[in-house]
Length: 187
Ligand code: AR6
Image 1 (cartoon, rainbow, N blue to C red):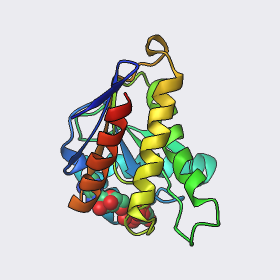
Image 2 (image 1 turned 135 degrees about the horizontal axis):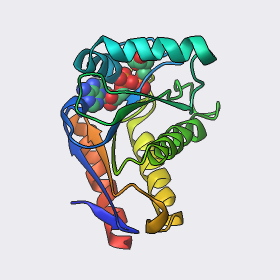
Image 3 (image 1 turned 45 degrees about the vertical axis):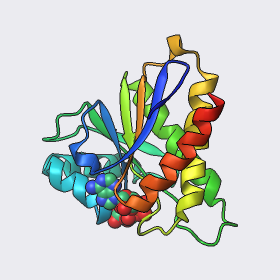
Image 4 (image 1 turned 90 degrees about the horizontal axis):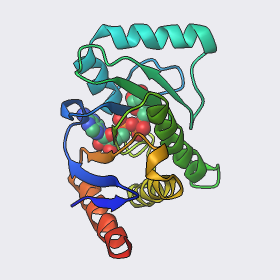
């Protein structure tokens, strides 16, 4: 069940983000935007080589992106407005600013989506695969950041109307469902 805050529906489900229907999806990439495994590999495979070509152009222009930043490409063959590539933090025990860097991934992706005029956006569970961020903490950070973002914007100023977390793994889907229920009691 989605929760509605300021006319924005926030929800989570289990699935493959490459089959999601909406405006923009977020990719959990790397600083060089080189493509890789996990969700990054799945998005590049589904969208085709045009995405890697556009990532290479961003690399040439600005040398890639830092953890917490975001860059936009087209979606190649995928029927979307575009792809927002962000780079999550590699988990190093929690004292290296990992939580604030992860929060910035969500913020910069939301800002990028709004700049593009996107009405809907889907996030994977950034950093919770190869980058090893603890899943419950990542879920708390993602939801808190997104909820605060939509709370402090009035609906007139925000093109986004739908924000979805697409969880590939069941344990992540269960975490989001549980945490969203708690937010649902408040909103
Ligand atoms: N749809 C949605 N989520 C997915 C999919 C999919 N098709 N495939 C995997 N996930 P990861 P990271 C989930 O490792 O930890 C790449 O090689 C997965 O279950 O993809 O941020 C990049 O190039 C997990 O919950 O990203 C970087 O080098 C989540 O996506 C590095 O991995 C993130 O897992 C980034 O590591």
